[in-house]
Image 1 (cartoon, rainbow, N blue to C red):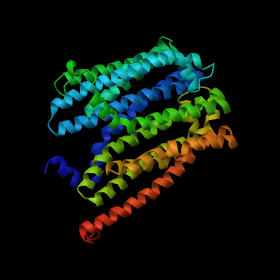
Image 2 (tube, rainbow, N blue to C red):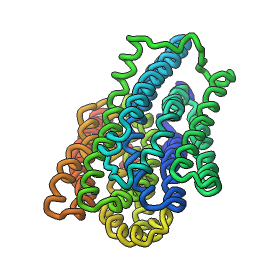
Image 3 (tube, one colour):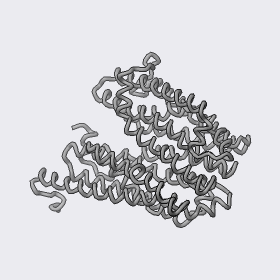
Image 4 (cartoon, rainbow, N blue to C red):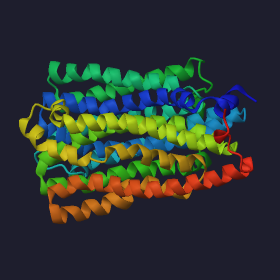
Length: 461
């Protein structure tokens, strides 16, 4: 029995979760800092219209993130399997092929984005007053998207070889450099939203250089070879197939943003989009570390389920749910008790702070339920049950949120847009709870069969 296998089967679940989740949680939180920091400095240095511009621009960036994650996650799966089989040559070829696919797809998106920039921004909710700010920001972001896509997808390669810490260092470098450059360019050089965009692109260039140095230093199990950077049809098809679920999740968020931003513009104007933009940045900062817990949770569950250790599967779900819910509940209390303080982090605009207090509370009223929703979907992924995993992943954003956000404003106008988030959270939680309880009963039955009716937990001591 290998050391890692023995650890996954016998170590305390709490210790395993901390060991596997901590680096990923830090990485996810750092990732969320990019847009949070940009919004804070832009709001303080330029104003509310600039915050609205970033809220309009972010869903477009999500499309790019969807492309990068599709390539990154798809290729990481192939790389892991190749390394596990001892085929380092194939793993290196996948790295080169994935970089080529990422480069070509990103360049196509960038060219189309720059050519159709104005109609694209209007589609995502930019009014005539916000359009100049959004265009100024996105022109720079589009130019730097190649670096953003490279660093995002390549971090998946690094995780695939088992070096989660190095991937975390790459993201920390980008976030810290972004935080340093933002005030210098926005306040020092008075470059406004363009300064924020330049800071973001520069930070991604630094992350890209860091990753290239890592791959060429000999410290990585993978080799970045120039001759491997070319499109390979069969490999590209396999990468896209494996990464397609990730693309669907990411792109759905962008589609939702089109609907929400246009509803907000119609019922509440630019100020409503700014409030939503700030709220979403806060929510992302709170929720992203949960996906770090998921990254630690999945291998524990998958390994123990495969080893027919069903009691440890249930224990992992319970422990991870407590971690995730406890973490989010702290953020929930902060938002509910000090909403104005949270909004004032982003802006000095008294109107935004006063107008945003009630919407911020409404949208986050069921925030503590999100952790269990996310973990439940990953539970079914880890045990190989794709149908419930897909349905639970789609339930909140697609199945419930889209119809609700289209219907409620017809009756409650702007308040209906704010109400759509908690309504979708609650309905998704109910569906998740029913499905998880059913799965827990199945695990109990399987555990009873494995032990012949003997339950060690009831016979200790």
